[in-house]
Image (cartoon, rainbow over all chains, first blue to last red; front, side, top):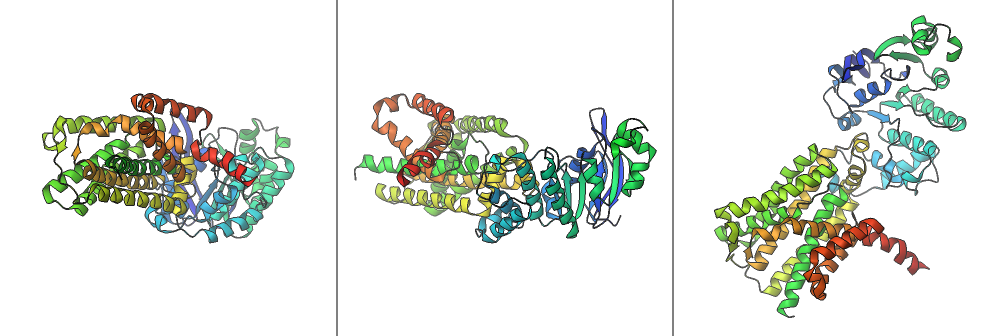
Length: 255
Length: 282
């Protein structure tokens, strides 16, 4: 257990369904992990467990050597975890710039009584403006976040996550709903985030993009890890082939 | 100034304090409270008992504020468990519990209330000025909060608690802060009211008052300090100016509330932004 994120026998069930069923894995600092699996495999549930949005029935979650199994989402975020939502969640009534500036001010907002004494916002607005340029949203600063098209909202999610100075970012389907050009642009940003030393976990349906960028591939099926290793060999594994496409003859679907 | 004018200005000051403090809870932080009258009442009773026991005006006002805040924090804890509509219903319950409880307590004067509260020692003009000064202070606090990082985070909590959490914002702590601040100011208004009338009964702080205060917030524009101040002044003067409104107060306020929610959900503040300011520029 020496990674930036360690999961030890994590399980959760919803009613009678074992959504995540005993997942143990260790994410090393600087990893670029692709997390894939068929629909209902438990990918998003796993992300939500790591983020603390739902709590596991058993097992331990260790973030940066600290046990956070019972910690709130907010406190995990302040320990260096960031995530982007599969379904975008901007503050629709705030401007794009405010959305990112609020994230950049995470140190100021950690406690309401401290936050009450702080007024200066300029450094955060400047930081936010720089991040918006980085994700390709320059020029949208003053627009209401709720008025952006989906492709731009997805980039806004990335800018907000980056503003938190994270050590590890969980991207939950950041390419879903984007056209080819937008997806290429988004994956470029994610790759550059990894290049700056941030650990990346990418949950994605677009297998082609995942295989192109990730260094390690983890395959989930029925809430269990059925493949973990370098992408080429994991994809070649017959068990993975079968789970992912329903039969061993579906190789073409993976490439 | 006539005694009538002094009385009306005092009531305006109190209503501004109450509406602005409710706006901090419901407008800034998005926690619908339909029991604001109970915190006002708790502050009034706290201040009245303190004044009778120790006859110190500053201590009484402080106790009014403290009783309002402690009561508010307790209800704030409930807001951590329930959301939106359920919170509204819970706070209605709190208001009925408060008036029901006070009516049955002999040490709180029961149905008869508390009369003969020692005066503040100020003339009625002096009392009015004290109320208006605290009202101005409340407005200043409200403006300050919306400029501070606490106000910034309140907006996030009111729009999407879960998304706020993913930005490291502890929504629960912010909700408690909003309740604590809003109900402390309501308690302070209660203390001022006790000195204004020197006589309090439970009926003054009933659910009807809470609905009127919410009407001021909604008609003024949820979250806008200026809009809420304007609405609090206008809705206090309206029944004084028009006899019909006074006779059918609930009907008129209820009707206005429905009209605003239906036709202009942003209230006076939003209407001004959309029509008056562009017209002035043109």
